[in-house]
Length: 360
Picture 1 (cartoon, rainbow, N blue to C red):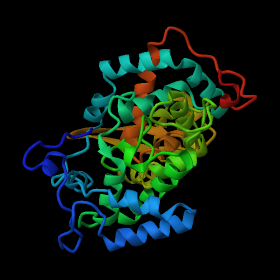
Picture 2: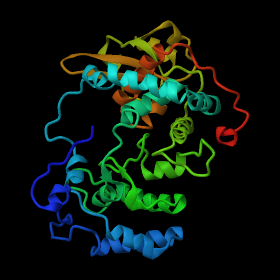
Picture 3: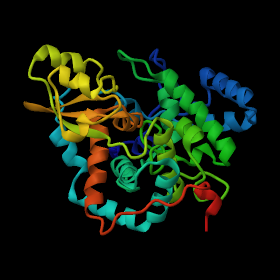
Picture 4: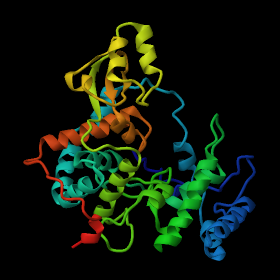
């Protein structure tokens, strides 16, 4: 969830900004205009991608260090026990289901076309957009360039330094701006730099976003058609298989050794249905007939016994969007809850041509 910044102190503090500080602790101005490392970065990016060097430098010079970003990117100081039931309740709830029904009704033709072209059913696309941004209600208020510059050049000290990842995303932001004619200063998103209804990072926008409405550009902020097509394309690229369930019901092995064997692979499908049976896991009837590989996925429920599902390659594909079994199952169950309330099922169209080629 997005957090509001406190409104106290000087004008800079009221905007959620304070003077930037390098990891060494040395003082620096609020913007990155005088940072030597930022200047070198701008020159390298412009040279690598044939971008106008002055354009890159001028925009990066206006990026600001945001303390809230540096704070939010770190894990909470005291980690609470994972609780699938509580996590599910945040997303599979009446208001989000109602919003999902409205979204599906309003954009059904694009959802149907996406299924025809990419094989991803509407409920999965609806589930992702619903979990990510509440169907566009929560897309983020941070300037993306501020968030990415803060994490690229001033990633907070800790056991894991992810500044390299965010430097790559900051570079991708300038590539995106150059390719799409977007000023990087105008984009707003999450504290981690994710953008638009699907919360794509800039590199994901560059690699997986599609012009689904055929207007000559990809727009993940205002074109719901492009959002739907891009989410479906992303999942298809990461292995979504049409017609395959995302998971099956399963009873985990009672023997701790057998259970540990199946859990060792985590969310990666690594075992056949026969392997499950050999280790004492009891799949439902459909799962016993599954021809591909499966993963025994455990979801903890705080102090209560854990829940288990048998994840397929499609479950794993959803975790490529967010590498969490809790996230993937919330997406799947939100989409299923919306689909159950649909008056009639959608029929996929013929995938003879890219939907953007037939845009009305």
